[in-house]
Image (tube, rainbow, N blue to C red; front, top):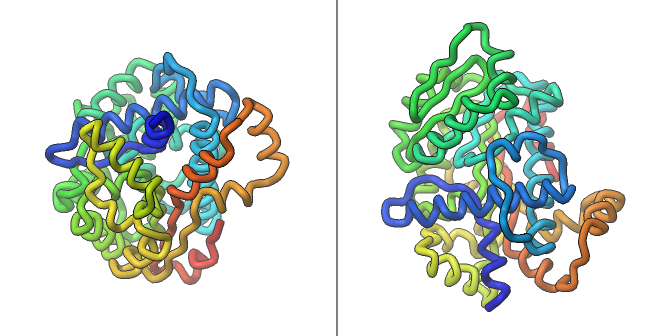
Length: 332
């Protein structure tokens, strides 16, 4: 069972789930630590994560590091494709964002949308806000874009001109929408919504409702979802069992049977186009120079395990409207 402890480490931050909140928050911590470790040994550049996440006391397995590299790279490429198509005249909603640093990295690259929103557990948001307030490297970029001297901030929310963090339950859509609108979400703007290992912790009905809300709320939109796939086989069952032992139930795992089931969920809930690739396919398509660079960082003796892990995660994206922008042309 040595491999099962590694498999769980791909999980990320998620929305509220009554009985399993603590377990789900634990996966958020795991994901943050894994990203911090991968950054520390050179997989990708992120000068901000060290200010939000402590360094792990244990070394992460090479297959985990490569998996996170593929995940971060894939999501980032789709975000930038959307920003290029809209010329940054848009907004981004990162649902279940955890300790994500995308806002700061996009600012550095001159790729900020009109506004960047994050939503997560109130407890996670409180922790992130506390860190931001006490780290000049994090708060300064927010203030540079904010026309007033003070930020609107309380225990579960920060609102500024270009960046907002909101503590909310993704299952309570009326509350979610109310809080987003309070922070000046604009339903007329092209909107990118992102979930990474979030929908899988919601029941199929709850995730369907969220997808329907997203599709019906914005005239022009794109949805990016990263999560498990091919969960019906033995390897998938080991992943499920391992998370259950940590009091973390994959309530939506039935939607993660295949790439087709992932795409079907999007199409059945209001999205006009849907695409999906497993992470092994994505990894195999990375530029050879970049693959050589990351594979030189550390030795991997379990290539089969890497391939198994990668085939059990996928990146999906869907669009609605935006024909004039060419959103349907976005691909990985």
